[in-house]
Length: 99
Figure (cartoon, rainbow, N blue to C red):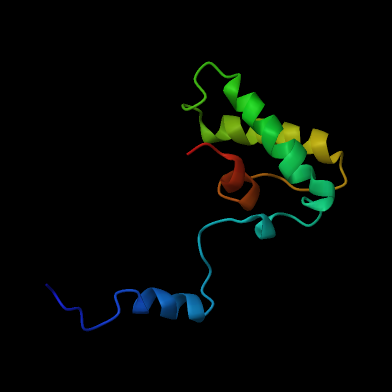
């Protein structure tokens, strides 16, 4: 049996306690208004899934193609009420893209 003297998660806990930003996007990181009326969960994400699934190979897509698709869907779902230009790496992109 090996005895560990220090907490292996101590450094991680310290980083989180000091408020350093995580690289993981959450719905809280979305542009203001995206979560209104549950449009994000009930409309935007399902539409992106259907659009991606309709591609010849949904698991092999270039990011710029995904951004264009996501932007068209975003503009349609939110109808100009939420103005946002989707970019590779932003919260919208991270939350809907297929890894």
